[in-house]
Length: 444
Image 1 (cartoon, rainbow, N blue to C red):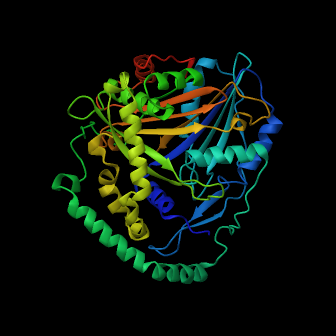
Image 2 (cartoon, rainbow, N blue to C red):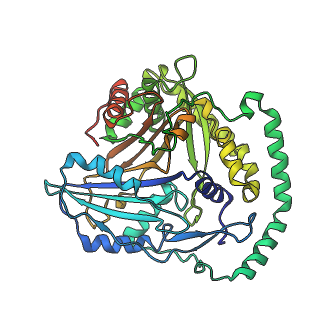
């Protein structure tokens, strides 16, 4: 099937409506030089998988968009000048700002930085509109193994305008029953909302002296910690590895004041992957939300573990009701997306994103044929402005995963009215680890 899944079309619509797009970034750090020839092979293979495709919009304003062939991989960006190892974090942030575009390309880019001590850093950035976190991990593993996918996508604009119009019009007519059901579901959701919930939240917005359209700096740090020590601590607290990840996110939120009025409760949003082996969706996921006591997690994780298990059971029995409205996405104008995004994201609840990739395939760290010293993945935002992040009440996203016995923790934090520097974010993350009686082996 070449049509985008509705959730993927929703992600693309958000990008075009707001100018803000999420990207997934994977970083490798080596204590040695890397095999550039192997990297070129790896880069070429990336263009034969999930990352090697683009989105072609329907000629109809209410049509379903389609996947088309991407046209190959962009060249590797090889930085000539060496930089000190302490500059890796700043370089990672620079790479995250280099634009990717799921429609016009490139959909991803690979950069290599030589270090003054003889080591190397590598960054891969891909549009979230072509792959989510697990999708990116899958693309990397397949590229390392030399496995390609035969999607059967057409070349861009190869259908011809009249063929595209007629085919998409037929699809639109066939989708009308689903659209009507989605409209009814939307009305039912709106009827259940309180008057305050129906209006996009505006309270967090502060006047920025005309700087609303400035690019927002969202400080990000990455920590590495021993995976064995992490699992041991989780057991000591009567929880699981995943529950400890949630506790970490809750402690970061607690330290930055991103809590509910009671001063302790943190609203944690957990993506739940639905990705299967042959899944070609960009965003193959749903989500659950749990309320976490950021003080109680210091001593006991059993409540968090039970709450997550209960939410997952409920999700399996009754999927997220917001998914019922997705058939309306092709018919949704951009202005309406901009107006209602706050409702969908529940920004008035000060959500905290917490994504756990679990134990990753070890080959994800062997993109040049040998093991990297460190591997990490994170979420970043392109095109986000100060006005948008302030109106959302700030942002906090924590990501984690394990590669070859080391667990990475990434934190992206923005607090309204705060200093918002890498140094302050680093202290937030370190403090949260200390709260849980854990420590980092490295911090970027």
